[in-house]
Length: 506
Image (tube, rainbow, N blue to C red):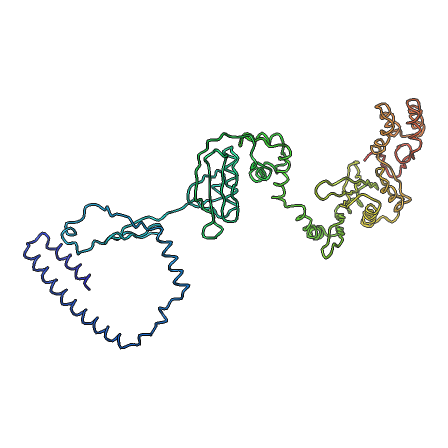
């Protein structure tokens, strides 16, 4: 009420400021009498209330306003934290005061600043003074990680992002920064021993956030040609698209990195970076093997009639992949409808962290082109794996009488024995390239190689005999070596004609 009368008094004084002094004095006297009467009534009411309070129970405690020790501690901690933002020695230099404030020191001057999230009120004497609170920047990895710039108060979401920003900054500036302190709550980064650069950050109130507390960005050291942060993992993260490109080339990748960072990665680093980048996009080998069961079921669903057999072995309670056989329905039906009765068998190595063998079977269509039939992935190339593969293949191709089929293989001992055991009356040919590879171990020379091909291409028996005589004139040992091999497996002159296929090379 007193404050309201004061406002009314000021309003009347302003209203009559340009009027006569007599009217102003009369208005002032009127409000003084009204205010004095109100104050006397207020004092009497206060005294009566205090007498009533004395009659109440002195040990009474209102539970609605009671505070626990934990609440008191939290409030005290909040007050202590707020004290860091308040300038207790602030001096009000607001400028010249109004003439009324100078003439009437009992009347306080009210400063009413606009409130905001980055401002606080500082009490200086009888005045509430506006003061801004610190406004720290946040590090946004998707934007700021391309060229990290540090400053005091900069906040990072996690410690890992802060370390990644330091490594990126180290590579860009060409200086090898080191983590002198690197634990769960503190990270200190330095450069050379004589370089004044240092960067210190720590967690904020035990959270995952990290904030820069001390930073000197000046360098007095020179740039170097080596940096431990410019490793395969760094290149895989920043050059992922280049490394996973199908037209990727080691030399061009090294040149690109050298132009952008002044570092020249080794070939080993480039290949490791490509492997890591591929794993990031396609997943690791272990993760892909876990999806193999789903892949087989998807093949069956999208290719009805296809044969997909997955074999595994138990290691404790967990299944471990061993073999897989795949023969698509379209391949089976295409072979039965329009291909020659020719089946070529071969295998090759699978390199990588999980090596194995790729077994495959191909046919030949009317234009003597290769037609895929089936393939399998096995642990090794042996008699057991080839037998398992060919038993499944013969079931898919409905081979009951093998007399009408032609099988071509290399000189792998296990494969030859399996073909003879499962298809004893089928014609069995050997690939001339594999046969020459064995011939070359004992008999070298271009003349011998050309003569051996001439013998294999001879289409009649007299022609075959004449070519063998020429081999005898060139090298007696080479002639004897060919005579020991069954000509029906590698020479056209001895092939059966009912297959309408004179291929002797896979």
